Length: 145
Ligand SMILES: Nc1ncnc2c1ncn2[C@@H]1O[C@H](COP(=O)(O)OP(=O)(O)O)[C@@H](O)[C@H]1O
Ligand SMILES: [Mg+2]
Image (cartoon, rainbow, N blue to C red; front, side):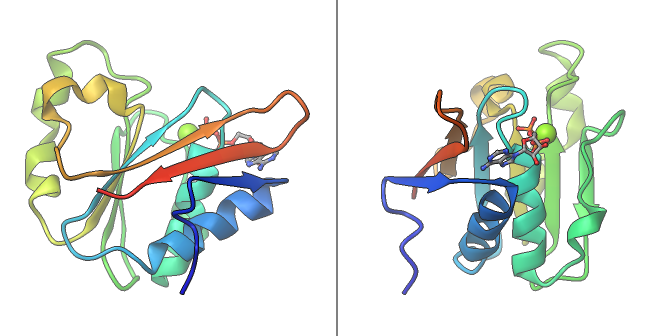
């Protein structure tokens, strides 16, 4: 049994962050939502690449979205919906993205910048936050629903 849900996990480098995502991927079932918190550069997209790999999809198809706020990665055990709200134009825009449909669907939905979901954040979501300790690496804290 893996132990990723131990309160904290230190990731020394990007490969650890990705490996944590790949490990975590084994736990998800259809309709799960992961709210991925952390500042710019924290490793949220890196962890999402690991999720894709862990689901059996192509990690290279996970990109930092430039214009698309929602991307779908297929080819894995579950469809992965990668949502990045960094470039959200305003509070109204989130309502037009069809996120409720994804949250109620049969894939795994990962949301970067979930603070911007406001009231749309699903109550039963997983939460993982990444922070940058002063001495380098990343610290991940994962909360199961
Ligand atoms: N554990 C880590 N230690 C050091 N650098 C990391 C770690 N995890 C990821 N990174 C690096 O941090 C940078 C930003 O990662 P990214 O996933 O794009 O962040 P975010 O999506 O949170 O803005 C990338 O260069 C990535 O390789
Ligand atoms: Mg990102």
